[in-house]
Image (cartoon, rainbow, N blue to C red):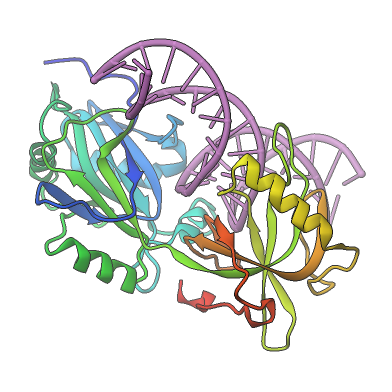
Length: 317
DNA sequence: TTCCGACAGTGGGGTCGCAAT
DNA sequence: ATTGCGACCCCACTATCGGAA
């Protein structure tokens, strides 16, 4: 019997490009929501975000639901999501769920239990902790569910997940202990999108940054107008930042390449002639038609800017 | 000696609340 | 009424440093 710690840092997953070999991995859906750790002690529940912020007050309905389940004292680890009409987790809907005037049902998917009923389970293999979680949770409820392990070949799972428009798959080593840091025993396999965009401008660097801050990206629509789709500001090292800045300077212009009505919510913007093409990977299209989680992958010299179009409709999520 | 993990810094989209305009 | 800012959430990535391997 040990005392329940007041705080707990979550174990984080490492992004990988391909699934590992071997069968000592357990796979789950990668939920596109907020990580949430629940501390339950003597029927009271406290809810903490990944960075240790107490969000109990913002999640009253969930807190009540957890108390009603009468789970043993412990730390429970999972992710909160809001499902859209198609039953897929929607990050945007989750953000809107905190608007008190428009409450939406938040679902808490539990996947781990580092402490339970006076025991420190962190040293146990993952599958034993999950067995314990499944046991104490039972059928759960509409709002509190067990994140099931997925059956099947991992390549098929990834294919299905991406097909369904999910964010990806999480893999966890079945025998791993729970550690409060990013670990190689938890991996992220993401369904990222990738396409070329026209560079319409750039922003000034800030602080110790060299070259430029980010690139303004666009795609041509049917009418031949360059539509702004957001910025990309990561994926460059210092050398590339400086090198690219020189190229951009050589085509800088005072003429805004986007429609006059386009608002760019950025400071220190420079325009360039819309003729350079950047290849960018990104997580998804947001409801407002911008790219989320973008990373620069390189310049494309082989493709004329005029041919750059949006490759997937934003309406799919 | 090399490598890994932690931290800080820079950049992104988005929502909310609050203060300044 | 609008705009700007910071604090949160999600994140990718680079650069650096100290300690583990």
